[in-house]
Image 1 (cartoon, rainbow, N blue to C red):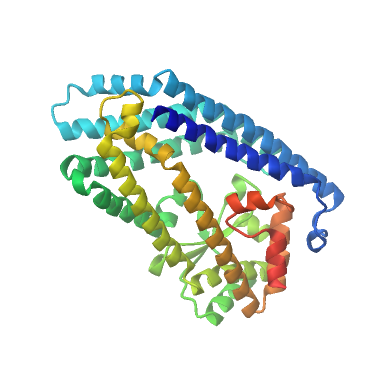
Image 2: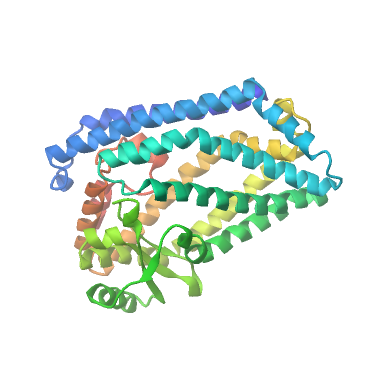
Length: 410
């Protein structure tokens, strides 16, 4: 089993590097005629340099992470941490409280250790690569505060989820997989419902969109589409990056549109309206509901397999640890990697289909040309790859390529 764990880690790394190499071979392909107006020779050269720098950084970062995990396994790092935590928690008399605290400590120690080891990479990516290519606007103060906020949020969520699933496992082990799935799924839906109200304010300010041409245009689109919407907000994303975006969040009465202030700066009113028409197209085709349903089904499969892993102590036994809920759960995702990869391929293919359907809705609204110019601007401004390798698209793209979307819209 130990060899299987290491083999899966190496296989995942090799597949990622192979796809990256294939993608690099397409850097020399000519830019398609339909988007040549936004990728001049100078812009294309800059985009290729950005992609090459990103690939080298990714190769070094992923190599370091993969090597660190393998060394931790071979040198007994995970076993040592598990033994230390068992020693610290031996004084706790309650078996349930003991199991919860051990699980929380194991996950949080590894999470914080990973954050520390990755910190130099995060700093270089933010203040090196992204700054050199004109994307970063994050200050050291904001960067530092984001780290501490993320750690605090991670501690809170990890503690809540682990306390719930460990309690279920300790008291109702035969039905652990089903009950834990229900608890985690309910928590995920709750976070999706209140994401914009609970999580976003920790990092960004959201202010109501002021009255004016854009607000009236959005109201007109929403009214014409018979789309129920209460809130339109602008988020101050420009304090971190120049990347532009917009999204719908929540559902039911909590549904709201959130526009990045960078989007408002970079696009015209017609183009922003077209982008939102695309998002309404997702709603019209019930894509959010479908995605949630698929996610719930796949997570149910994951928890069922996790239950089997826990029952037979597959991962902890392979690492030389005593029967341990937290060790088995932590490494279960390594065993789950092949299934997760297969499901992600199906999910990405379905997502690309949904994007075409949402784009088709912009044609019904009569704003297809505005959608095309918006997509071009967003792609060009973010230096997106105009000629990705088909295999890379198949494995990683949740959206069709820019050229394919333009061809469909026309």
